[in-house]
Image (cartoon, rainbow, N blue to C red; front, side, top):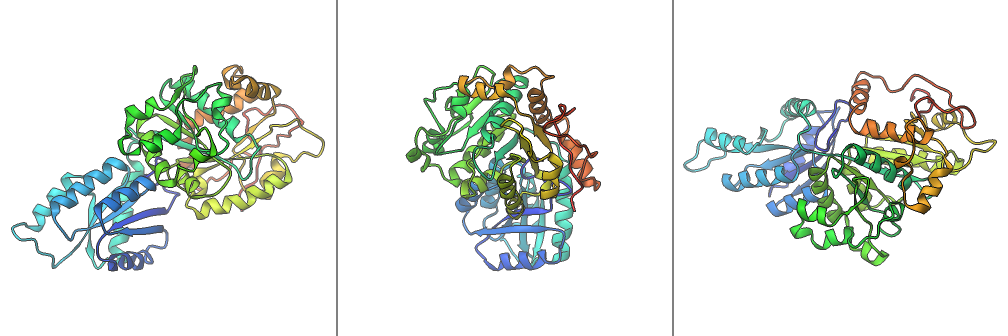
Length: 431
């Protein structure tokens, strides 16, 4: 699901209200109480420039514009908002007693529909009308084609050292082999970014340069600021030092990612293991969040705390993927995938087996996926993630979730046993 497009199982909304009348926010929140199957995070701004800045900073599903001023300005704002967030739904709110000299209601509606304002709500906002509009527009959005929006995937973890960056780099290279020059890896581990080292690239530009050029950043400049890898991957590297990393804030990340997903088929984001405003913005703008863990009890305990936090931030279970990464040799007493699934009460979507050659590849700067055979266990697991991200399985998963299927056929893959047939682990149905 592209940001701004709701699937049937994700009922959370990020709403932006543009109005000089703060009462409209109260009206919307009150009406939303009559729509129990929808939850929303609502913010309000009173100026057009602030509305554009808000959309640049954070993913927005639904924009409600108060039709209380010049129609030409409102039409211009609608065009600008949709240029920044093509997947957002823009709706107008109007009062029945509103009068605009020399202009009929029909003329106003036609002019706003021409700039792709999707619908209109009468004030004061009623729960019945709001529910009808949301059901009508969001169902259409879920069925709409993806258009030119790229797919964004973020790799995150509750702690460092679990192999998150290794997986992000290898998955990105795997995608780049399918789509050369159309995959971007963004290293947002701003203080300790390692992606450039793993790709044997020497950065001359970084994400800090994109931040400094934010006012003139476009597709061409973004590509010039990336580093080209022999696999066909482009990397927007982490800053050279921590002081430069301090220049990168959530607003800058939002602008860069919004532009990146309009410029590349796939965007992979490697993150820093800390929940801050930068990570929250990354999650807002990501289609999928890959949560990487090891089979060690302290790490699993951290993931158990992280998963409900992600839900609270609006990253629903349908947008999460749990990856069990064996980045160390198996040992007697190592937790099995089925044990971890029981502890987390969650499906383990992928199991990446231990491979000593991965450690060697980190030192040589040659990602293992570029050397691994498709039948090797590590290569098979990475290619499964790659294929899912490229659209062959993700859509079917969402459809299954919509039909109430929340689990796969149970399996009992053991870390010390034979290689898994498809790189995935057993798990029990969520309770």
